[in-house]
Amino acid sequence: MNHSKDPFQSALKVQEAIPQPPSVNPAWKKGHKQELLPIDTYIEGILSGNRVILSKAITLVESYLPEHRALAQQIIERCLPYTGNCIRIGITGIPGAGKSTFIESFGTFLTHQGHKVAVLAIDPSSQRTKGSILGDKTRMESLSVDQNAFIRPSPSAGSLGGVAQKTRESMMLCEAAQFDVIIVETVGVGQSETAVHSMVDFFLLLMIAGAGDELQGIKRGIMEMADALMINKADGDNLSAAQRAQASYKSALRIFPQPPSGWNPQVEIMSALENKGVEKVWDMIIDYLNTTKQNGYFQQKRNEQNQSILLESIKDNLLSGFFSHPVLKTALKTTEKKLLSGQVNPYVAAENLLNLYFEQLKS
Ligand code: GDP
Image (cartoon, rainbow, N blue to C red; front, side, top):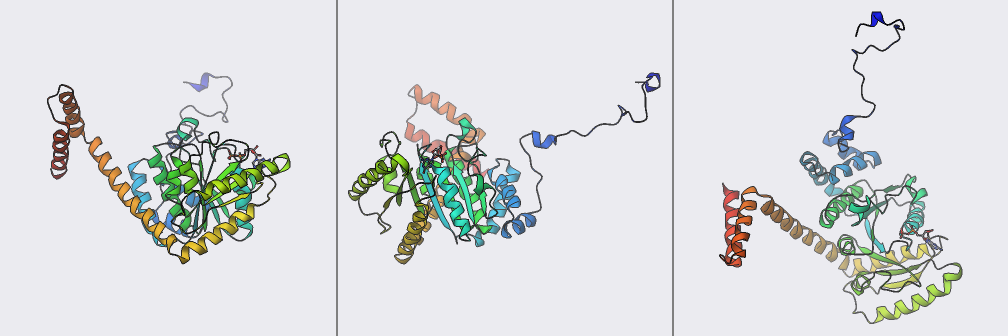
């Protein structure tokens, strides 16, 4: 364009020939690709408790990009020696039971006592709702600005197994960043309680009075996993209903077999909203830790958790290696066709496919 013909041409006018930088980093638009830092920056940042660096490292842990995964693995490896000296608490309960209100008051109570609290979430519904727990910024208002707290929403993609693994790894990083109380929250509606139970020391079930067991989606198995049942919203007109629920849950628990921890699960009432009875949870946890550290159960449980992570991880890697191998994908399809027309025995076919896979690995 010849600007000399433009009567409004001025020296201040931006020339077309000068390319303008985009207002948003294009790399960010393409799936929040973050700039990688040198590994030592991550390690030093995490070990000194820098929450911004911790957040960046967790983003790597949550990523599915191979270069991010590789770096994340190195970071975790180097942080491992600094993990393990913390209390891991799992919290579950139906939506509306008061989990975030409780974590807000419980977490604040702990930070006032000098603890550093990290809150993570496992949310199996997050694929559909884009993070229904911890995703809402208005939740945990004061804890989210507390210098001694770190709140991280659930990774929003992947299978429950994948999300659980990422939460475990994030937990390691939080521990290395000197957080001594880790809270893992989940919605009590499905498989995720088992996943959370398998990564924590103490498992708390939050309930409300008046909602039947079926309504609360609480199965007997989940009650059996719980180290404590807290009946929330024990305030105002709801107080006596909460007390009645406490009595009936206490008697329900009596018929359960003695748990291997040697600790008798407690049933208490509280009001997370009015901040009443929240400290009872901490007393219980301290009591639980004393009992289980003395009788050896604490360490035994952590050892068992590590063993099952090892086995699960082998299984996951074998399965994904097998099913994503291009030669095996084709062979499996062919075998399935033959199976349908009765040409092969499924047991023999499975063995043949496995042999083919191991041959492929050698070549
Ligand atoms: P979550 O879905 O389990 O995280 O539940 P929320 O913490 O978001 O709480 C759901 C609703 O119950 C909110 O309106 C809270 O204000 C209310 N709530 C939570 N705890 C209490 C409590 O102790 N007493 C009363 N009365 N309401 C509460």
